[in-house]
Image (cartoon, rainbow, N blue to C red; front, side, top):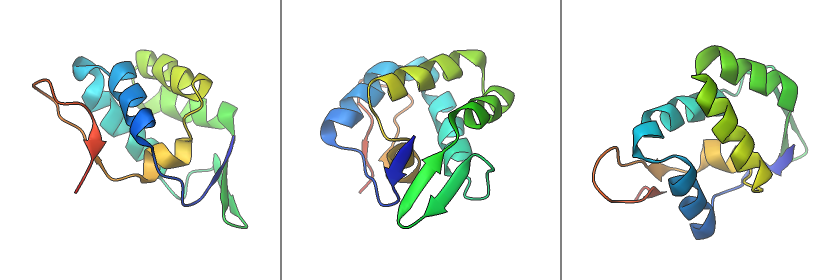
Length: 106
């Protein structure tokens, strides 16, 4: 998967992210973002303003650091067309309780 290095999540993406990562899974989303945003990770390649993710290597890395259910959720996000760079780079407010959706951090 290749994404522009300056990708950001849209409002529709935030709704999708909120639905896929329900409140019980939000702590796992925080860990997933840490893995995806690791600029030194071997599964990320930067070139000419784009970031390329080696999906197999990334899934192995996520599997080793996150619960197996998160790998399924990540695959679901990719299938829905969410940019992995946008997930890792967009400043998010991730409420862990209440009814609030995931939103942009202000």
